[in-house]
Image 1 (tube, rainbow, N blue to C red):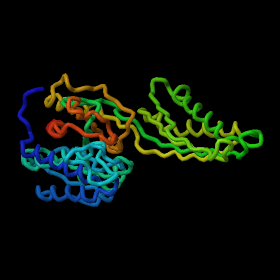
Image 2 (image 1 turned 90 degrees about the vertical axis):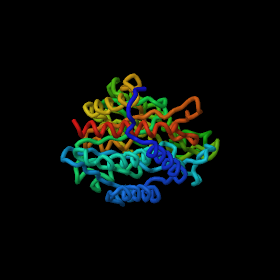
Image 3 (image 1 turned 120 degrees about the vertical axis):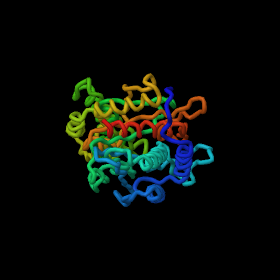
Image 4 (image 1 turned 30 degrees about the horizontal axis):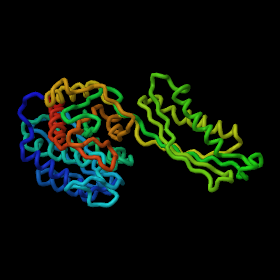
Length: 392
């Protein structure tokens, strides 16, 4: 790791860790981050800032303006937790049954609060402005879009937007900055197939929705294999099936639920048409009727190559060029994509795994936990990225 003078003093790092542990003990789900946003607003006011609260219900915005005019950067952190019961036995485990910070948003909020302290301390020498965006409701989707609709990208309008995510697929001390598509679009589908019930011994007297559904599941895999360019990655996963009430009864209806993931925006736009054509075609072939609910969560998260280059240079300063990767992609989704569609920027992955300490459980796992060394690293990378952009 390179030798550099840390931007963040020991007291700021300790505060970030303490804040992260406090937020971890008091997780709040999407659009209910009342305590969390209250802490954020209080900390920002204590720094002399004037936060705007109640954005997208519980979001918080604040702007640090430099001593001279220049460009504007938006830095974003998400605040919401997940409806998961924590299984860790740590002093800072969740005190709210069935709710847990199982994705690291407590880390992101703490990092951005630490960055706020540094920005305020150096504001006179800073060119331009930095908007601090504390966003609710990333997990369920809708938080980013709602904040944008309520003015997150106005007054001042940013010229670049950056965010980060602690990353359990990377060891502590490693960073991923991937230009172009980084995270996939997320769609959810629900299909109800209706036929005609009958005795299982006399299937000819009914119209079997279970057989129809089985063929539908197989046919949907042709979206990836036959409907889309093979170089455009697509995943269609049926994850839930429900049908029937007894071994000897053909039910009247059958139900499935699942998700579609894709990186390419043009393919993403065409997906609902491919899906509906196959589902309705199979249903018609088996004499069934069908109801389709195709819900769109996030579009692909696509990093601007020029902004990614700036983030990569900043990351190399902090962890060394050999520890910065540009080939990490995931079919997981992220609503930071909404910001990136409006303003070019970059979403950075900060390694948080520590195998030696057993901190290996992935995101959304009930034993998820990070090596808190990622807080100082993430804060350094994100702040240095913002500085580089403003000074360019």
